[in-house]
Image (cartoon, rainbow, N blue to C red):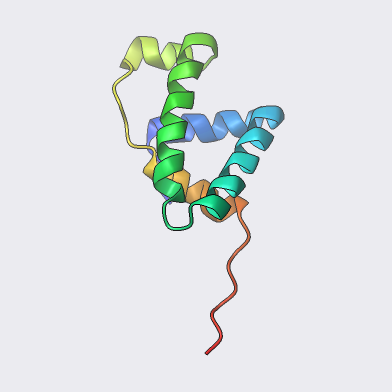
Length: 95
C-alpha cells in the first residue's frame, strides 16, 4: 500500500499518539460495522476533516499546511489501509 505524504503524515501521527490512534481505531471499527461497503469513503471524508483540524493546532500538520498549503487531497488509500489493519477479517462465505 502506497500512501501519499498527507496520508503518511496522518498515519505516523496516529502511531505516535496512542490516544488519538485508539480513537481512530474505534471509529474505523464502527464505520466498518455500520457501513459495510461504504466505510472507506465515509472514513476518507472524516479523515480530511481531522487533517484540517490538526493543521490548525498540531505539528507536523501546521508546518505542512504552511509550506504545502491546505489543498484537498484524497485520503482513500489511508482509509482502506486502516480498515484492513484495524478490523477483523471476514470469514469466507460457506457454499
